[in-house]
Length: 268
Image (cartoon, rainbow, N blue to C red):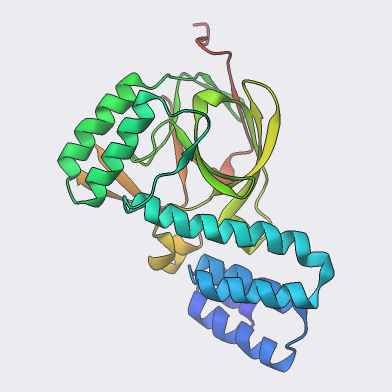
């Protein structure tokens, strides 16, 4: 069976073995190396993925921009894991608001196993966070948040080589590309127009932290599972889900989010 068939079947280990056989036969063919890097990223084997990027850099000059972008993405992913373990602090856009500081405090409590205390602190954070009305692919909402309680009204992005937490309140529009490559199941390319002006290309982590160590369908962002460490507190695995006052939206299904001007709501 070909590696493509194993991937379609959601069998990562088998796809990896098949792809490694192809590379042994044609070690200088960059397209197989690029696919191997992507597969290793899906599997969370970051060091091996970095080694493949180094090999690709020596084989294919046309791939240098891709190598640079995803070396940074892997470094950010490794930092991200430490953030959700309560060991590191993410960079915010500007000075963090009080509610964002509370989210970090809750993350530290959660990582230490204090789920009930973390929930109480998050509830304080969400009560203080501004609600931002807008539309998801033309469907109106009064507020939007990540369905994972650790994030709430916060978007994780990789931007300018760094891992950042961005409040949805800072965003005017968010345009998300349709996934076309295996690596898009790990980092989805997107484009932000800022409420304060200007715009930025970004990568959005497609999956929740730790997903690479779960079932293959979760690592491939084909579904989402939830843990509820405390009543009303949810931790996700697999594909990221955005939630509004009316519906839930798996990240890979979303193409365009626009926000109303600050403080505005939809007319009844």
